[in-house]
Length: 86
Image (cartoon, rainbow, N blue to C red):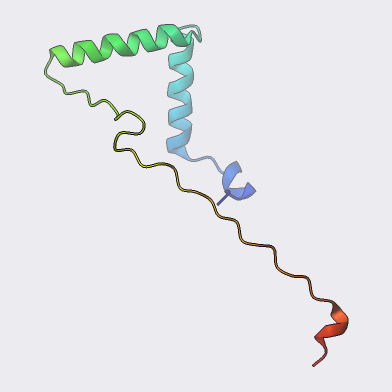
């Protein structure tokens, strides 16, 4: 279900914080996505060295269910106003 326009214009403080962090991080790396991912890889390696367990997502097709199929209803049949007499 799509969010209403009113809900979209209301600022959620958690979402605002995430956006601010993302922008700060992007500026730190001059919006270079490769540099951001390299920093993430280094962070993962440091965390592993300190004993953290980094869980990798499963490969597609191996235990991951396919996205749900969307079934559309058949459109309703239009009734003429003349045939809707009581």
